[in-house]
Length: 588
Image 1 (tube, rainbow, N blue to C red):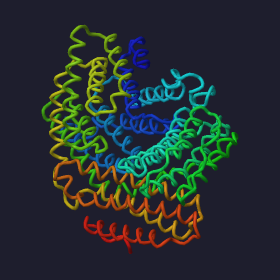
Image 2: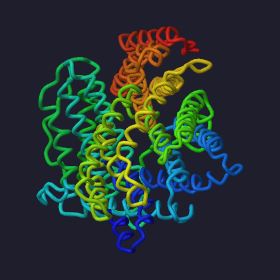
Image 3: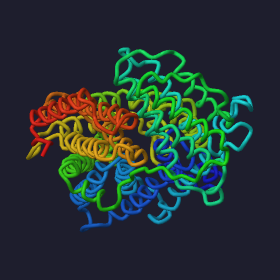
């Protein structure tokens, strides 16, 4: 609201529109977690959006005069091919590709008096304002909690996101220990993987130089590192399938409380060392207690495994990148051609809607199309009712303020997010000097839904499901690296921990891709149906590898016959499932 309000006070409301759009996208891209990791999570897509806004403002001048109806769809389709291919390489790249393309469409279609360069700078200013607020304002948790329960005790709140993420790992370890031997154990193991991923991401953000060597930062890294052996031991105990004494979960819970309050862990429950897994858990608890009591900690860096430029480009130009890029290009180009051919005044709404709809990380295709349609109708109705009572800049700014506050909650469901963004965008359109067009927005969004639904199920040359196949192949390779290292170097704890994180993180990504594909209609889900068995075999193999690692660390360094037989059985099952899915064997 603030950049928009300042622009209205300066009698230049159109200048506030790009800034408000930048802040809106920043709110959509931000997620709970560390403040500093939000700099890259929000800032990098904002740079892509500014570049898209600049490029889009130049597109109408391309080609001969009067040929925009033919030239713009082709240019936007080509840009969609590039943005879609890059989007297939990861979550951050997906946000960048989407923001680049949507901003390019808005830059090409929204009639603003500002030049392309001014629009890009205003867009960055709005996103920068959102990032600044994210860095300096305390969260609701910090403000409402008593001083003894605030992250880091009475200290500064700048690490509260990282603190809560690390505490979540210890709480997830306790949850898995409590669920061991019961039907909820697999779900708690997946929750532990998610907690570890979130903590790893939170601790991998850009470090503010002023605080790079602070004791609080070193302590956080040490406490996260101390949680990794605990997670390994808990996974091995859950794999054994036997219920555990209730007191074994008390130690991780006390450590979670100590992380949140910034205190030492205090006395831990008496050890239970009746097996290799329990001995590993007790040893990990003692090591964690030492890390907690040594307040200065050790300066550690967590390996995040961010892909470099070459792997990203290789993925963008690979089968998954080509498949998704073609679909984005078709959706964007066709919707732009239809809107321009029908001579719609707000033609850019249709391709912008299509770009959002085609994103696979927003849920199954039919589900997100229905959610988009319902959210648009609700948002347009709310907008028409609100502005039927009065018009002008003040109500529009108030609507933007309310919608901006609702974005973090609305992102939990695509229909709710669509309704909020619809009201916000229609308010910005009014401030940009365009006529009110609430129901036109509904018609154009529904047309875009139909186009995306058609293109999403359109058969393309070659094999479908490359996104799922790529994720599964990556997880299979990570599982085999982890297994080979455990068998060859059983006493290398740090190296094993890095490969274990890579294996479980890749496994979670593969499972998410498989589950999403399975929820699609048969034309989309059919080509990847066999990968459900591959994902299940992978989960069993990785968990068994972790149990073997704990056994080898505890024993003589030789794999026991029961463990060896389980590993061989899981490898055979994985190989059979991989072959049945249409891929070559993986044992070679």
